[in-house]
Image (cartoon, rainbow, N blue to C red; front, side):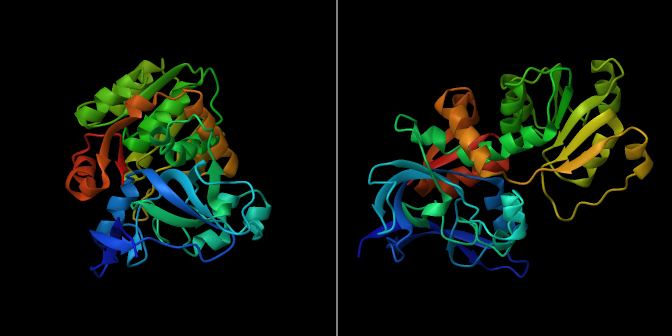
Amino acid sequence: MDKMLAAVFHKTKENGGGEIKLEQLEIPQITKNNEILIEVKACGICGTDLKIIDGGHPANDNTILGHEFVGVVKEVGNDIRDLKKGDKIVVDPNEKCGYCINCRRGLSNLCDFMATGTTFGIFQNGGFAKYCVIPRSVIFKLPHDIDVTSAALVEPLSCAVHCHNIADVKESDNVVIMGAGPMGLIIESVIRKHPIKRLISVEINDWRIKKAYELGADQVINPENQNIKKEIMKLTDGEGADVIIDAVGISETFENALKIWAPGARLILFGQDFRAKAMIKPNDIVRYQRKIMGSYIGYAEDFLDAIELIANNIIDVDKIITHEIPLEELISTGFKLMKERKCVKVITKP
């Protein structure tokens, strides 16, 4: 049987963390009529991949990681009629059931079935490999002329589109994004395409500060040597932030957001850390009619929108994809770049 290189997660720590090893595995085979064998062309590295190693995010033992992947159809199951060999596709890694109460209410991102652990590249084999078998239900067909490397951004971009839509950004808004990590910068790229009054980024890393400006921030505040509240109030003529997106998700960023929100503001919590805790006065929400909302992954329509943003060159992909590496360098180069925080999106190619 032919072999392929794959990045496999092995649990070795009591907290659920472990290590990723590059291994030679047998190429998977279609076993169900609704399945498709895809040849992976590109797969992005996500911060979640690093959290899995450290035990900060659950994952199944002995699973091929990589959940931001795109490829071409290699073989199709007997029930597949609308896809053929050679078609370009992108994967929505979060498999939904379609029939639980949340799915039927239009909240597919909160699917009960998905909550049991179904994500490809975390709980099921994913895209850090040459081939992957996946069901038709999680596949989006791509335009034939789209660049497949660029299309590896569809999954994270769909999350940014979802966040943008929840924020309900208006033309007169002062928007603040807490954190210029990969997702903070991708969210910035989406919001920057919407006409707004001002976009301010909050970041401490010098490399990321430069990138935030490059992707369209009007101003970047470094909380290590600047007072966030004082600077935001000065930049907004004392109005405060109408939209705040916390792309970090720790207690400190949430508490800073509470210092700068304007009356009627929308605070969108995007970054996740289950350990984060914060105090808040409910009257500060009631008296000034503010909103606090979560933004979690996205809907199918967000995937469709993300595809169009890339296919129509609306998002500056070249500024977001900062590195392309062979899968062989996933650990030695890819993870090193992520830990050094000197990249936006690193794309691996098997």
